[in-house]
Length: 106
Length: 403
Image 1 (cartoon, rainbow over the protein chains, first blue to last red):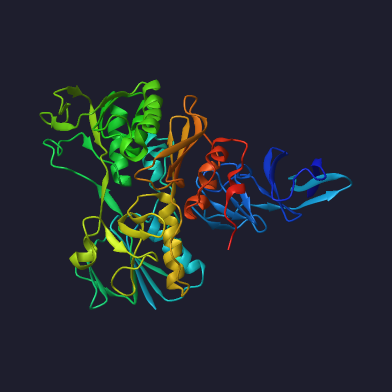
Image 2 (image 1 turned 180 degrees about the horizontal axis):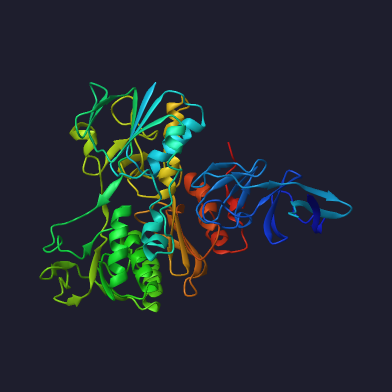
């Protein structure tokens, strides 16, 4: 099953910015691309660096450690050392809060 | 179209990955002298050397090549590219025809004629096999003598200290990396190593390696005799350009134009072996990980019919102890250095300018600004030095408009 988890209040991620949240022990990054929110696993598939500490350019996030690039809308690795994608998660703003949907194993 | 990629490293892997990833469906052959599929070299002086990484980091899983229709010849040396016949002649005599060829044969450590260089216990470091041998020897050693303190020497020194070895380095210049970084930034690297207990002898070079059956001591040009259980020579690399032959290659690498093309139509050179006519820096041959990937991507797009000039500013990192070092751009000389942060506290960005133009950025434990400065370097921008010095100024605000 999966569950929406509240992580912050609405508007926490400004346009063009990245933020990181810990959701049930997972680091999840949220990017705001022209008003649309995109959530993805905040761990580079190359060497595990935090992608939310990198820069967001359009829909592309660039890892601050070794320059891996991912498309935040799909999680796909689009350049640099990483080959594997990062997981993308559902994110929404509802009832005044920023929420991320996390799969919960029973 | 038949494409042959010569060289089994990162640049070759990037070319092939981009070609297949972006729809190339012709014949694709990869020839690598090493018996392993392409792997990442940066860990060889760091996590892999220290044994923290047990396995090599392969660029792509071993099955990927066959699964993606790539014919591989690993463990086979390409002897000569025959420009007129449009064939590559391999060791053993096989010939492979091509419509387009990409030479990505990389570089190898320089081995100047120093007496005793051939002794057991004197190492250089380039391949996974080199790293395996060095790792095994270091595990039995309590002291090491390093010749040269460029990036490889500095990284090996750091790894050896972390493994508990006593380390002495002999370096020809007055600081580590002085030729690349100048005395101030080189001095910052020197201070880092001194604080971690590395003994450094500057202004001297290796005269000879001594030992009966194996290495026992290095004698320097200053007459010092430095004993150790092993020695590592890290005094730079030379391009492995033999396959190009005398028509295409030079001692300084294989000359290519801004779009990575050699003088022979349909033949390209990328990575360490390429002497690239960079639109911003002029002819340069550099040995960076990121550049190897990006030049592979660029040449693949040219082969796919979307010719690209390579104008990336170059970027690399070096991890030493708990310090992360990054550098972008390329500068052989500069007349101004602007610092944001603190060199003394080892948390800073240093911007190197020539006639007001930003040429290169060096950072230590300072995230983001190295890469953020790259569009400025590519545009040969003249940023306001006060803005560069101010940590509160986001460099992206200084970027030229896109397009």
